[in-house]
Length: 289
Length: 342
Image (cartoon, rainbow over all chains, first blue to last red; front, side, top):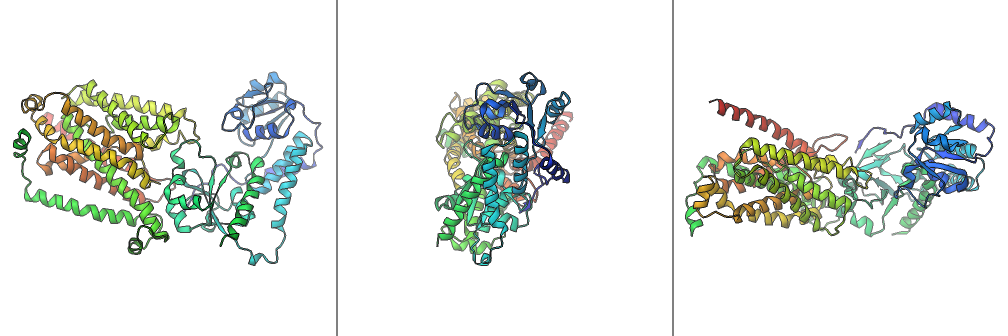
């Protein structure tokens, strides 16, 4: 198995932790009433957890069938991350991601708009930081608070020392994503697998970020659970591996699971559900003879 | 009767040529063994073979379900491309004719892309059928645009124009395809790949390849007669559109079904007939099966190279064949210039 570059999913610089700390000690701002977003994930969070009348604009991507969960309210303008699109809307809060649309965010800041950059999350700990930053920016929101609590509860048991840990069965799992990509020990997906009680075979092979795994290796490693990633509804040669007949026995015997596509671009929305489903899957596998 | 009397004049192979063919025939099983032994997982090959097809042993599964279909597909696609190239060079009487270079593969790939990514028609059989239709339209266009017996320049010009147009359409179609990976997949359709292929792809392409091969073999005497000139071919009874159409359909079936499952793999159809021509005594009929044999071997060897190349990204098989083919193409041009200056 060959480890590939860290990709965009790098570890956070120390500056991000300092920024998070500053968020924590800053006084909460008055709740924004005209919120705009320049980031797909933040769009999704706003559309799902914030009352629609408080949203003035989201990115055009959110209106695409691939990402849209519900119709976008009519009064919400779609932007292509250009500052000039947001100025006439006079938002009192502009949410931006850590990397994308930086030029537009900087221009809006120069013009006196309140721009808040929400850190990306590539681990469960970063996810908690991200939710904290969102609460700080948006003010108290019951669904957001509920998600934070869910996350904290799911993380808690793993922190406690379990005296019978040695007796607990740990089935093995391997992620086979598009283009034969697999996820190693430094990734959120690995954390979800291990917190659900699986041993991630990619991490066992020494992969720490993204790696490549061939179908031959999947068969040779014999994972108890084969984990696909994202929707394969649209045709792509990239998905050819998971359609190979050699994996049919995994699918037929129920020893496969599909991580939701949203986990890749917005873990805040998908991580908790995915973890619960993986835990359930593990329980089923352990019961099997 | 006419055909028999003509085929009786087939030149006989000399002993040294027979030896070369024997060598070629022996090299195939050896290359197959090398292909089955190549891969990221170390296998006990003998145990995997003796475990049998239905064994659940992971070595046996890797051998029978992953490595063997891939090698079989390399052999089939190589044979189809070699034979298609030989037929194309024979029919157009042009040493530069090649399915990938002249847009036939692009035609097939464009049709496959439209079906796979936009999917108006469902059903597995539609894929090779549409790719064959695309290949047929492309080869027909080149043939019409350049005219039969066209000069090398005119033919290559027509082929390059059609290939460029079809490649642009492929890029455009993939640009607007509703898939996150669509743009990245242009590389696959332009350079081909045998990765992650299984028996389903082999079985999908095989019948159409066989039909194409039968058509081409049936037209071998026409190709022989054509090598003496069009008017001689007509005087030998090969007049009318029946025979050219048989060759066109044969090429489209062989190349179209290959492209549908393995993408565009270039240069096999160009290089192989040139390598085999001296061995078969310039006989275009015999060149067909000799090119099929050598094409199969060459593509399998190229795939062994791909399998044994360690890299972050898979080495594309079309890049390997281009590395073999492009210098050969240079040699062809240089030797052509030398002949002209003599």
